[in-house]
Length: 82
Image 1 (cartoon, rainbow, N blue to C red):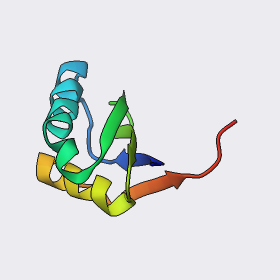
Image 2 (image 1 turned 60 degrees about the horizontal axis):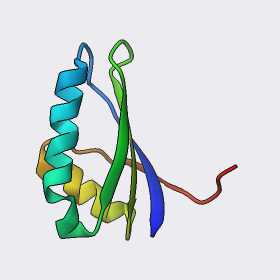
Image 3 (image 1 turned 180 degrees about the vertical axis):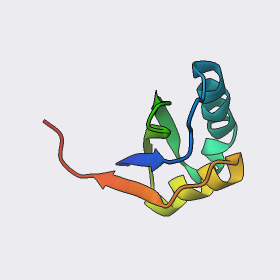
């Protein structure tokens, strides 16, 4: 399974509880695309959310996020780790 990091913009002032609700929305449907969202991070001052996932393709990750209500086109495959 490939590993991906994606970035969402426009999350200014979002709380940890709201991030958790968005992450839960992904978790509820991730299996339908063969994706697993491992973790999410929030920078509310920059309005950014970062999600780490595994899955078959970046398109599958994008489909889950779109269906969960927070689409992004910024999905990056992580091919090396140290």
